[in-house]
Image 1 (cartoon, rainbow, N blue to C red):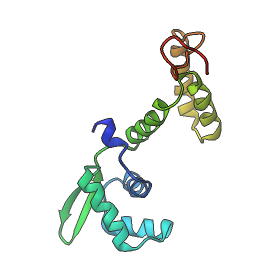
Image 2 (image 1 turned 45 degrees about the vertical axis):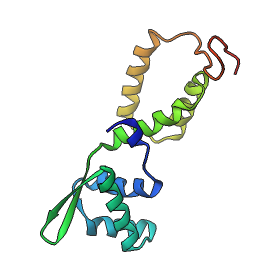
Image 3 (image 1 turned 90 degrees about the vertical axis):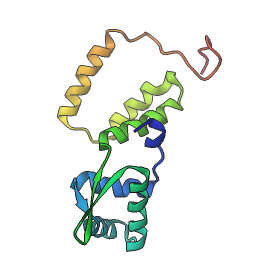
Image 4 (image 1 turned 135 degrees about the vertical axis):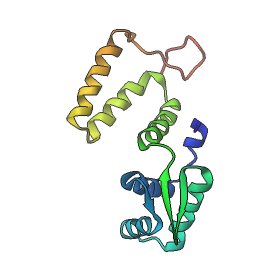
Length: 144
């Protein structure tokens, strides 16, 4: 899926996708049960969200007897990455590091992920510039 499609998902559709990603292959009744407890939404609202996600190509639907089974067509990590990348692309390059640092401070992160981040930082540090220029104004300007 291309990035344009990856950013065209509503907050409510995200909730459905989170259930599907967590359960893997799942059926309508499981999605209804989980979201009704979490959000207190009606069956028809949830079924509409599922139908939209199938139409958009986020979910595949397989008819099995009297029910449908759903599977995500994109991984949760890919989806989250594209959402974050889309947001960061709208920000000043000069301040992205500060934002990423604040996100790290405020986000639950496993020791394994922290080790991976440390490795990535070590590699990136080898070629990182002393200062990242601002990209808010015309080329060559660094005022921000």
